Length: 168
Image (cartoon, rainbow, N blue to C red; front, side, top):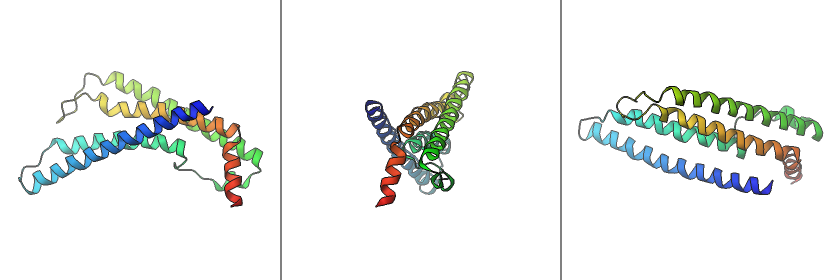
């Protein structure tokens, strides 16, 4: 389990690094759009579509990392009010449900990738596939991260960590 977690640690850091680079690119092209609009009086039309694509590329994989880091949307009040054994079961069930969602996202977005290969994004001239690849990648990441979280919950590591932090 430790090797799996270390590998996912590296993967999560890589996702954050790539998202950071994409964020810099987003700032640069948005700056170009503002410069073009207000200084050159000639707005580059491709910037808005490129910015949308970059936002998708940033947001979806980082949301998948949120599954691993536990900063995704979660309602904990009910679960934490349960005894530790029941809390662990609910935690595992929640992680499995999130993993199933990730699998569905990966599978159905892969279908979108396959069916949109001949379509071009207007103004950018690249394949529509690049709109759906982040969905597929994020779905796969969600499956991996949710599996790790379920295994940790089964081992009692989350419950123990929560109990230890509540004692401080």
